[in-house]
Amino acid sequence: MIAIRGAITIENDTKEEVFKASKELIQEIVKRNSIDEKNIISIITTCTKDIRSAYPGPGIRDANIDVPILSMQEMDVEGALNLCIRFILHVDKDIVPKHVYLKKAVGLRPDYKEDN
Image (cartoon, helix red, strand yellow):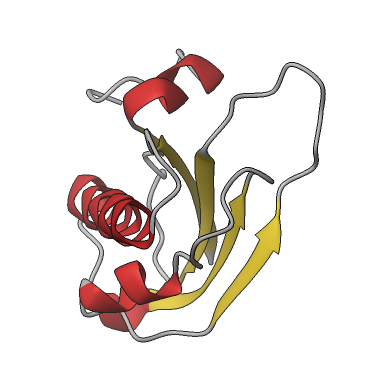
């Protein structure tokens, strides 16, 4: 089993943006890592405290991913990136994971570029 990380930001706290960003992030993680849905065991999601309109789960499920999802609030750290959604996927696959950071979240881990 491996863990794959990912993060994305939204511009405004709306259900539509949370769902759209969550779907975009999960699809990009699956694509870059060549994952089959049946290999995903579970997903943990966190959102910064300024995201209050929705959970990421419906966006993930809209991408045809139906696994256990646990959503939590990210630690509220001074100076942290706002409007940020993070994922950790637990995957039953033996690969070197390609972590995915999109939009303003690329600044969290500039060492993980799209070509990783």
